[in-house]
Structures are given as structure tokens and as C-alpha cells.
Amino acid sequence: MIRVLHIMSTVTGGGVERRRLSLAKAFKGTDIQMKLVGTFKSGLIAEQIEQNGVEILEVGDFNGPFHWEKHKKVQQIIEDFKPHIIHGAVYEGVTMAAVNSFIKKVPIVILEETSDPQNRSKKADFLLRLFSFVADRFIAIAPNVADYLKNTAKVSPRKIITINNGVEIPRIVSDEEIHSLKSNLGITEGDFVVGTVGRLFNDHKKFTDIIEALSLLNLPNIKLLIVGSGPDEEMIRQKVTELRLDNQVIFTGYQFDTAPYYKLMNVFCIASQREGFGLVAAEAMLHKLPVIATRVGGLQNIVVDGETGILISPNKPHEISDAIKEIYKSSDLQKKYSQKGYDRAMKNYTEERYVKDVINLYNELLEKKNINA
Image (cartoon, rainbow, N blue to C red; front, side):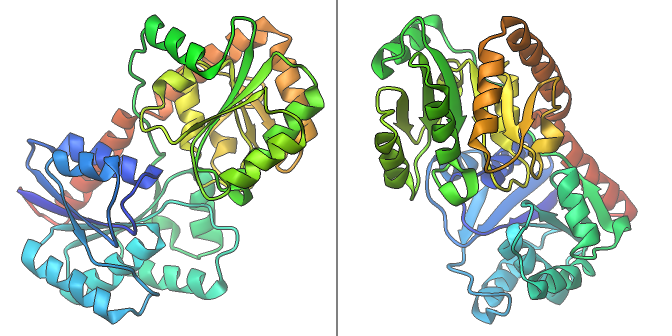
């Protein structure tokens, strides 16, 4: 039995947790035993990870790289579990994985950068480079993240491996479910729906840029469907009211199962100022949606401009407006972007491909270290 200890920060509802769930499902019933260390856990994804046989061990808030009380808790977990592989993700998880695998001499150390840092301090970059010395491999979740590790954090290129994130193949949604949801949300037959999905943190995701774009369009039959919740929801709602768009913008709140909501959309839009990967863009492509995305981070790798959708500049509502109008007016473009986006996502961004790449990396390093199950 190969024992793998994953370490991250909070285990709640984000993309990192979803990929740990992907691995938990893949490892269930195999010769790989997985445990997960986090600062704390909550929500449905954490429950599903545990339902798939992975114990989540909470160590409490991690206050900086030299919080030795938390390091000691991780060291005790390592002593008890005796992992062959430690796999740390998110800055806190990378820190805990690097420091404690070195102290406890874990055979294989994998670190993973899950963001595209724009404002990380030079000290943090230096520490990341220091941590990389104990790593056998440093995973980047997208090509732009690999560039950050190489050029900014100065991680050795021979240690960096790019493993693109992956998302689940969407479940089949019945016509009855779609019809019922449309009725409940007030979406009518002639509406053209622009959709977006994400945590309502406006500094990052810039939902207000999409709302301003809707105002510029001045087309009452174009609706904006916002799927998600977060700390800036009230401010975003106020922006909708300020622009007199209450009849065109629909808030659904947080939805664990987003599949039926994607089915209500005609085009997907993500207006982030920064983005490590952009899982929702890949999800939208798997739902055969044209995608409008900002030319930042991983989004510029996922969306091929003029082929699977339209790339725009960040912080430019008028560019969003123009892109929506271009797709709205052309059914041929809608069909082209939908099919080519789906084909690209199926080839590059599925959960199955992600899991396969991670397992291949594990096997490569186990063989190199002559460790057998």
C-alpha cells in the first residue's frame, strides 16, 4: 500500500478541494491510501472527500511559515501515517509539506502552486524557492503558473512540471429540470442568457464589469445569471440596482451542483483580474458554451481567441459588451465556439486526464526511488 499525505489550507469549496476529491475517488479501492491535512474543513466537498475514504485531519489556523505549533501537529501526523509521498498545495500547504517532510525525511515530496500570484511579496517568493529545494517535483496548474515558478520564484526548471487542472464531465440534465429552473428564475423563451459562476469576491472576479457591460448593451432580452455567493454580494446587488438592471440580473446564490445552471446559458463570461487556472471556463466549455474571458493567467491558455471564444482585456466593460453583442448576433459563431470549445476541453481539461497525470507522476517518482506498493 502506497501512502500519500496531501496538505493544503482550508478544505471548503474551492477548485483545489475539488481536485483532491477527484483523487480521492480515483484512489478508492486501489493500492493508494490517501489522507488530507487542512487547517479546517466544512461543506459538501469535504464531506464527499471523507465519504470516498479519505480522512481529513484539521490542524487549525496556520499563522505564517514559522508557526511551529502547527508544524509539530503535522510532524505527528507524518509519524503516525508514515507517508511515502507528501503532496502540498496552496502556499500554506506547500509550507507545511516542505518544512515537515524535510524534518521527517519523507521519501517523495511534491509541491503544487495553485494560483497565479500578482501581489506575493519578495520574501514569500524567496521562501517558495527555498521550499523547492526539498521537492522532487513542483507542479504548476497551468503554463502561466509554470512561468511564475521559473521566472519569479526562481524554482529550478528541471523540477517544474505542468499538470493542467481538470473538471468533471457534466452530468446529464433533463429537459424537465431545465424547464422548471427557467420558470423559477423568470427566464423566458426569448431571453439570451449570459452566465457566470464563482465566489462573489469582486476585486478578483470583477462581476461588476459584466454588469456594466450589460448596461452598455441596452438590450432587455439579455439576462445575466450569476451563480455563487460571497462577501461582495450586497455591493454587487447595489450596482445592479444603481444601473436599473434588476429585471435583467438573476442571482442564484451558492449551488453545489452547477450543471443545470450552465444549461440555462447561451454564453459564459469570466471577467477576472487574475486567475491561476480558471476552472469555470473549462466547465463552461464542457457544457458546449462559447466563453468570453479576460486575457489573464490560465484563462488565456484555456480559451483560444476566435476559436473557442473571445479573449478581452481585464477591467474593460465595453470589451465585454462588444464580445457579447458579437456572439449574440451570430448563431454561426455560437455553434463554432461551442463545438471547438467542447473538443478542446475534452482533450485537455477533464478530471480523468488530471488524475491520470498525477498518478503517472507518483509512479515515476516511486520507481525512481525504488518504492513498491
